[in-house]
Amino acid sequence: MKILIIGGTRFLGRHLVNSARARGHEVTLFNRGQTNPNLFGQVEKIQGDREKDLDLLSGRWDAVIDTCGYFPRIVRMSAEALKSKVEQYVFISSISVYSDFKKIGINESDPVGKIEDETIEEITGGSYGPLKALCEKAVQDVFGMDSLIIRPGLIVGPHDPTDRFTYWPVRVVRGGSVLAPEKPEIPIQIIDVRDLSDFIIELIQQNVSGVFNATGPDHELTLGAMLDTCKLVSASDAKFKWASVKFLDQNKVAPWSDMPVWVPDTAEDAGFSRVNISKAVNSGLKFLPLEETVRDTIKWAAERPEGYEWKAGLSAEREAELLRLMREE
Image 1 (tube, rainbow, N blue to C red):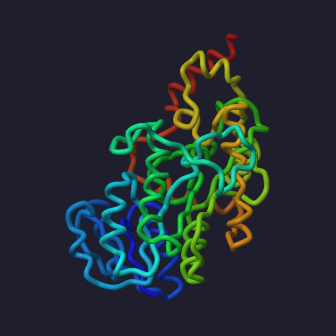
Image 2 (image 1 turned 90 degrees about the vertical axis):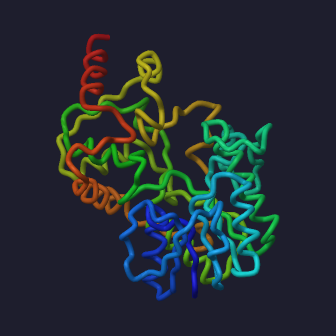
């Protein structure tokens, strides 16, 4: 097959290229050439801005995968420009589209969020999900049944630029007392980027359309089990110190950013880490062992430059201060 990828050199995109090429497909990348421009020397590249240079896309493809659409106006432009050039439009959305996370077992038919000003082009905690939902609608308006919408949860693994999972395996490697949030029984959902990439390419091969929640694993995973796996894989002497939600709140330790992966287990967010993925699993979504994800993430993170500036998690100094405050309580 011939597959066009908008983006393709950062995180999910680069793994999609690997998954597609491993199956013998021909890949073309369309991006601005600003991120990892020397990656994939054997892959055709069209350099351009999706807002200004869509006329450069003069070929024909079996599918396009849009990995970096955030604003509906721009996504609609891409969809309309490619309508006569591709058979299927694949849009990478997010489980953040859902309007209410109180429900346990959110499925693809549940309501998505809305935003008062649909023309806004600023990403915030409140706008991200509704704007992604509007991007989905833009694709569906143009491609109808020939569209595939993927709603991932937290994507993890090698080359993750956000550090929202990487923090934990690397922190556990250092050992000692490790500050952890709330309690070990907190449910979490993550998906290895390689599993997600393989799933998307398989769906394209089968010409599947529709909407799919895509996170994992296919059993309940807890934060404690994830941290224990990090400890086991790295043979660390880490000792987890579980801080209460009250303590973390009082000390301005933010969920998801300061304490990655974690969202407090409240009635308001009970469904956030309990999303229904049965449709994807029944359609072929498979999962690498968590041990493999952790091991490969540690290996990749060790290759980053010395002095790398972390995007998520606590600094060693901040964590030590919080652990001291916990002991003094």
